[in-house]
Image (tube, rainbow, N blue to C red; front, side, top):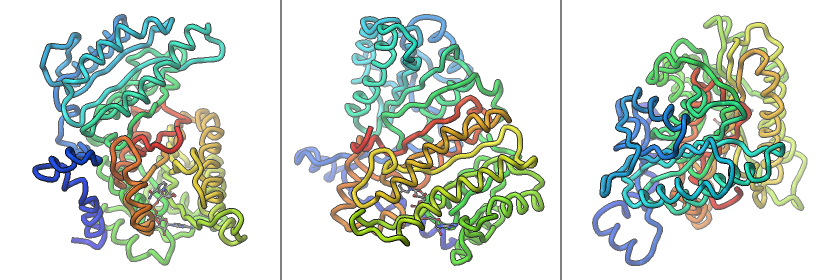
Length: 458
Ligand code: NAD
């Protein structure tokens, strides 16, 4: 077993409380005392079924018919009406034709009736349209109503089940390839720690997904901060999905970096990303070794926490330099290069601290909120070349970074979400691998929280 695998193995077993309350005496005790009852989440493996059980598709109209047809093409067991007492793996509510909030009741009450028959780790997914300022007020009210529904249902579900939504931009049909790639992600174990969140399908997307098990076959991906933690998980996950990975980290992490790169048959590039020509160094390495570069994952990040009243230059500047300034500079180099592939992908790791703010993290939150701003403004620049740029905002993830938090604070932070547990590096990695897929070509400028619906922020 490599050092990295040992570390990963230790992390898998890190949450002993979840294991204790998942069965037998521990389960009974937690129930009687009203303690949190997290369950072991259903996570993706290439052999596992997309959903464990039948999928109930709710809604009337062409959208729901199209979605049902696609689910059947994916060999899913589809129902258009609930059968009493039958346990469901998922409910998909297609709400793309809403004109007034009064139209919500039929579908939502049908969903409500079926919620009691959900299997463990089931999925609820809504498909609706984005509410625009140009909509008639009743239309916008109905569309925005779905937002409230998803966020509330996600908080009501138990036993590892999640609720998420797909939002269609104007003119995008419910069964568009972009929407269907998001649906597949939400239904699968890849989205285990994504709860109460939305993905927007902004354009039609790629008509064809070559291979759902190896969607990144032939692609070359760069992952910064890949020597450990979330970055190592991203590198392994992209490699599992078929990509050749260039693992980047500081020279001081060279041994761990080499171990990760060897394990996944990629290459290691020792590089401090704050180096002014870091983008060019990455491009040169990729072109010399593989003759292409398709996917860039900006994962490297640091924290230097202090209350703003006690902040010093070094702490402020180093966080801004690593977490955002380096990404801006590297992206400039990538976008200017003729070698940055058409249809390329950039995915940045932000943080829920950048959305909700966090005491003692004004520098970190500035950098991570900055990442979100950067992603939104970069999307139109990449769209010209058919590329996408998205951000993933992790909440509490079990890594070396969070292991440093004092025990009591850590235990509270870990439970304060709808799934009542911390996420794992693989959960962040799966969301990134989704954005990198060819099928997600119509999904850009999104910020997806991987936080188990953390109670902090939206
Ligand atoms: P980590 O500290 O375990 O790993 C970060 C990696 O980045 C390390 O290998 C480090 O050497 C590398 N790195 C740091 N500075 C670098 C530089 N200048 N050049 C190249 N590499 C550099 O952190 P993690 O928990 O795995 O976090 C990964 C990312 O996820 C970070 O951007 C972090 O802010 C973000 N994040 C983490 C959590 C969490 O709960 N762990 C939550 C939200 C966001």
